[in-house]
Image 1: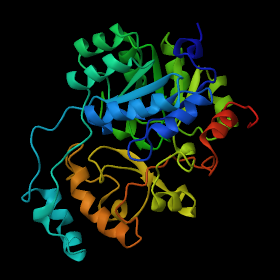
Image 2: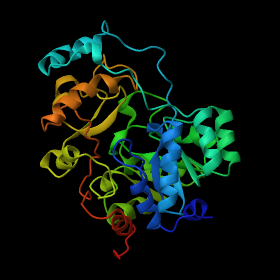
Image 3: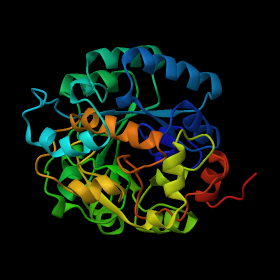
Image 4: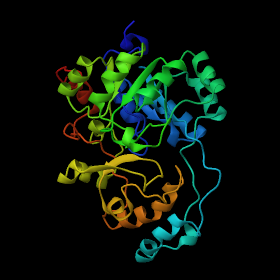
Length: 347
């Protein structure tokens, strides 16, 4: 059985789940075109996830992917005495931000029993995980619903580990990919290699289908990945300018500017390495800062700076997630892009 048959899709194109820049509209458009749309479920509460899934199912009856995070929540929050808080203080003063009003951390919940209960009602065709896999009992519960399970591997070792845990397919996430790295067996960034170096190694080492992610921008890169043994590809950055994406205006502006060619892996926005367009925050504190708090504690501490700057038309503190190959990122409908990636003429 091919991967497309396994997932119930017509085209070997998966849309990357992208928290903060997309929701049901993009997922429905991609699934409706024959690919596999995705919902970044890690950014939702159980209540808002149920609402999003009802909206998605009202727009499309095709298979879709729910993506969850599997990070270990930090044991305690950072406070005003932390090194990271002190790092941000001068910028807070510059923008007139009262540190006493910094919001408490929220969002980005790891997959848990409460979120698993949402699956009982919707039974998605595919459930994928980032940062490893959930506890065995949770994984068993997902499989019992008939969901196909995918997870990201950023190294050969991670791919072999995932196969041993029983995943149905592996997403080979090359270093080119935008957004958060899915790394979970190591935090050593020197282990992160490009898609077209990682992909053939994983294909040769595992028996389950492999999905290439990172640097996928057009039909040529799709063909290259398939030629190296991928059963499908996953694209994210290419969809960011589609009208169905919720990408903010300043992010859209950056994606259409010369600055999009300069990206870096940084931990200053969330506490975990993620690839985005280099801006003031990355230059000021990164790309990697040793005092950045563990994921996701960094998010609320950058949020006030982001809000203040964006109100003045600046993306200096915004996480401008973007892969290294943004050449395919265009303002065209997601359905047309999905067909173009698959080598089909737009309808």
